[in-house]
Length: 246
Image (tube, one colour):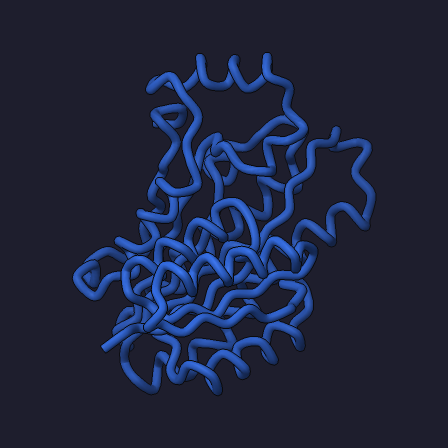
């Protein structure tokens, strides 16, 4: 029987790669997008081409809007049925000196990157608890583990996801629900667009494996953790960073 996935932020980068990876693995996938609907539509079409027998649904929702997330989850459940897997991937990034951060910068970062995961978890958990089964996956960052200069608000939000993961794993384990966190390193996605070729080369050189990571590599880890056979892994932070943080 095909499992159903609800994924936030599926139009680009890691989210788009995850939609396609779950499609290849035989899952039905509902994913949200907000700022890039055209990109989301392309992902939807590609997923359908990869897995014609599976079902895919794109939903417009701002991860920072509690009501919008609740509606999207309800729409996904109505279209697909029970949601066995949740992937909280929606996020924004910003490089800025801490002393230059505005209230708006801080609240938007927390709203999308941390609050959005809380809203999605809260929306899907009643069904998972009722069925005594679920896989919740949070996409954090190596900066959530170590902190990043000029990315204090981003680091704080991503660190919050790690705390959410560990605490929720303890609370929901007795209900057959695992909660894990993937903390990517420097991944070659659209979020790197602001970096020059020289900066990208320097980051690759600093990474022990000598290159940047790919979204597809992170996506494969998410599919692994979502599998029924991964049920003895919970509350863990998987650092997928090429050895940059050990």
